[in-house]
Image (cartoon, rainbow, N blue to C red; front, side, top):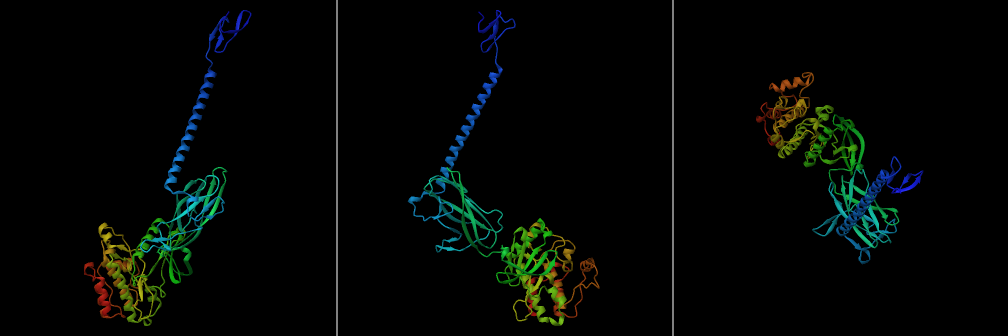
Length: 484
């Protein structure tokens, strides 16, 4: 009898029990490893391990989520609706209620316990809203806010929350207006029934009014007609909140980062200036596709245009002196605040009135080239060629360091053109820009124009000295103009 043999034929073992095989002579059963069984066992074991890991992972996640939700519930003030005196209103979801139908953003005034209707621009303002679950199942709620909105940003805290039945949760809603505007919009509240798996959305109204700032809402601007164009862009006559304004729009082709940086610089500069001799700055639109600057509209255009279009007999000397006095006071305001204009010329002096009895007849504008003198002196870096060649001081033409006296030189040339009612460098004598530069850097100056007095020319001469230190300061210029 052969051990482990289960079938015999012709005195030979032809089949053995499991894990054994007949030898070559078929007279004995030898042990034999079944690889397929080992492979199957390994695969089964791996499956069991993977299933256990997945189960443990799922269980761990559920436990962590539960703990997280519990911590959030403690943090975000979940309360029992039946024990609360909060008055709730229905929504589009019969299981979800809210304590206010409109989220109206206001500012609490701690001094007199009153609310201020207007909220700040470019800062977050917070309001609270309670969301309640009066259904039979736990719900998960989340606010969905409008994306790509140009006028404001909005967020909620928490963003997503689970609310058990009979409970309510207080949400914080934050709005950040990006410009001065009126906001009347909706945000969506999504509620998921955790048992049924159904989601229902509800609309909640939001309302806000901002303070008036220099970040403007493009929808409040009304363009009427094009009144000018230059390398900087196009200027339109328009209206803003009942005021006639000039709308300076950047050309599409110029909306590169360097141009946008210059635009930002001018806006920041204008926002600091508050003087009756500086053109009033209403604000700017910063929305990428609608970038523009809004300033006071000067009915009579620039002094440069007036000199070209009106005969000298139509503009009295008294008025021309007032033009220069107003402009000098504008420059004085800038210099007293440590600012260089760096592009003083008739083009940048806007005429607002031709009435000699008016206190202000013209104002300074165009501060794209302006710069803080303290920053310039600290960094010792000066942009070459800033300004217009005709009005450039010798030190700028020679590409050396300059300061406030460079504005005085530019104003001297401006006074020459205003008092003389003529071009300082007529093309008949100065055909090319470099001929003006050579003339000035060599210490030459124009002779007195026929229309100006000796006193006026003497004042101009004190302002265009070759040596910057010999030029009189702007406050002295103002005093001398008042004496003319």
